Image (cartoon, rainbow, N blue to C red):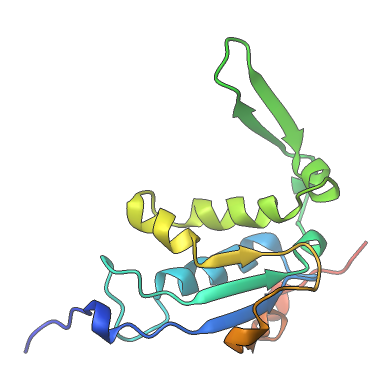
Length: 154
């Protein structure tokens, strides 16, 4: 018996839409990361970009458990004394709330050139509109997968 290794000719990519409204961020990010890598496919090969294209809508309505909205996110400008921070809640209420979902998914992928390539297959939108109707994306209902995936809006 030989181990199957996928080649670029074997890879078949599909398009999926995920509605993030009311879904817990960490659970959403882990499902997206698994699908971006292609681990849900029986022909998964770790060294190939086998994942599907994922479109996330309503990223601004994602839910966080506990006190994670108050957790500070730090970054450095590159200048001396240039450390800055913003809480996750401030980012979600700001101009680019989709960055919270992008960062959560990015941190669930292994680091390296392949992960950066797989992140290009992710498109995140704060609202309900997206411009990918021509690809005929299928809908993934994350809320129906597990009752713990959703959170009541308080």
